[in-house]
Length: 177
Length: 277
Image 1 (cartoon, rainbow over the protein chains, first blue to last red):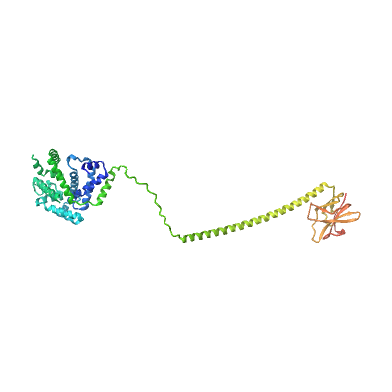
Image 2 (cartoon, chains in turn yellow, green; image 1 turned 30 degrees about the vertical axis):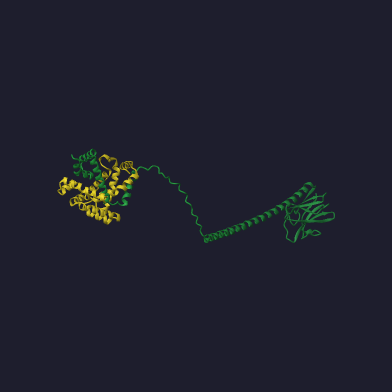
């Protein structure tokens, strides 16, 4: 199903398209959330709300302003960050790290995902310390680049270029896996 | 601005992470539109982000999926008429299970029927007997009534024939009274006598009843002396009692005689006497 078809189907409130969307993107979108929120139940709660939000806000989605996955991932990411900053989750639980996440994947999941988990560990090992740091805070702890800049006293431009560099490494290596 | 520099500024990544301001976002969009190279890079970055997310993520639990679709259920457009109209459900074929005939329930049912039938038979037999008895009694009653009717009819016919004779014949009435005699002062008996037909009837008006050993005897007194012409029943009052034929008599009299009557009257026991006028 092409992206245009998916969008049209969602706008028509078509059940099959919604199911297709779920099958194709739920894993990735849930990853966006559960990277930031370590508690499985809360992460699923956030994912539930975010997915419904996606189907309801599809009319306000503008194709010209970005691709569908980016739009959906941003909704999930923002929902997770909002949840993380809400009263329900104290800052102290903000302890997700790449290692925790990878370990979690390895210990909680089935064989197939364990294999993938190993892949992620290998992927992370391709990053240098700075890149790894950036990915951990931005991807796994829900920091914005400006927050990261302020909190760790890293110039904004440096944050940006490190994000760029980290993603380039990931991009290159994902193609390899 | 150099395109390569722009790509490497990190703005595209932050765009994808949704961390740009609205103004910066529009700038990125405009740049991507103007420069296919930027657009390409943007799409490639998104693709790798999705791939990364896909790779690091795990599938949310099925409960979440169910919950999501339950929440969305009312928002889905009703699906177009389902392609496969469900075939009319066939009437469930009743599986014919041949059971081994359970004899016990049948035996119980049969006994019950037998008992009920017997009870009914006894009841109706009783009813029949009762009815039969009533019927017999009615038959007997009817017989009695028929007998009575016959008797009344006979009596009527007899009376009727006597009346006919009395009316048709030329009868003289002879009053016999006991006024002048000592036996029964108030005794009174009438004699009706058809001299031509030689027929005599008596009708008791008043006559005392006698003991079983005695009878009243009627006498016709003519030239040849008194002749006994029959016994008079004192009980039959005001009916005509036929006596023996008399051709010639000057007077009639009744005496009390021994049972069966006498050849000659016992004059001491003369009860009533009447002369033919």
